[in-house]
Amino acid sequence: MSEEFNNLTVVKHPLVQHKLSFMRKADTSTGGFRRLLREISQLLAYEATRNLDMTTMRIDTPMEPMDAPVLDGKKLALISILRAGNGLLDGVLELIPAARVGFVGLYRDEETLQPVQYYFKVPDEMQNRLVIALDPMLATGNSSAAAVQLLKDAGATNIRFMCLLAAPEGVKRMQEAHPDVPIITASLDSHLNEKGYIVPGLGDAGDRMFGTK
Ligand code: URA
Image (cartoon, rainbow, N blue to C red; front, side, top):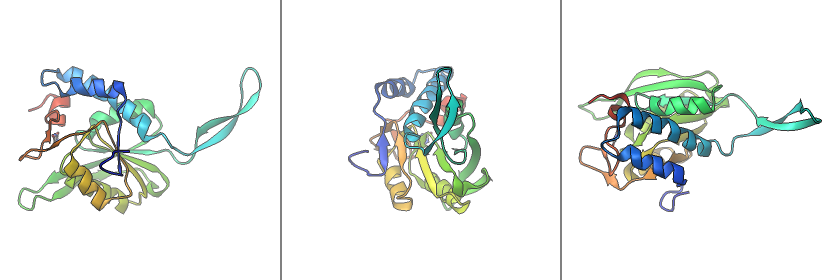
């Protein structure tokens, strides 16, 4: 748990921090960035799923029968917040291939500056699943808070938010709007600049992973 925010876990594992430093470098290639993002997403997901409910399954090993531990309950739901969430989704799906997947698309209305929904498709029985919302950059927190609200409106009660970088402004916004939603990140960065970019950050995560400008 972070010392500053009680809803925030910063994963300080050396592998996570090492990979993140190479993702931040401005001269890391699109391919390199994407590979690192896939790898780091699996390490973050390891942390985000640390206390999943377990049960046992009766199996026969070659030696003797045993009650072996397995995950309990409905398949969890991974929700990609478009478009950059897809970069985290690929890696997490490799780790949890049976997960159900949903997508939330939001854009910012330039007049009201409020997030507006343009796409929403999530698995059924959201109330019975652990839901992990994926978005690499928790910046102002406005679209993240709106996306989490949409997931709650769809019935989700057990939500975690996984991101690569968080700004204090975004964590605060999420904490106010959704104090029940734990946030898992690789770094709590310094601040947002006047354009809403995380500093020191890594630039525009979507552009860096998809090679757009
Ligand atoms: N979104 C990004 O991709 N980068 C930031 O720094 C902030 C929001």
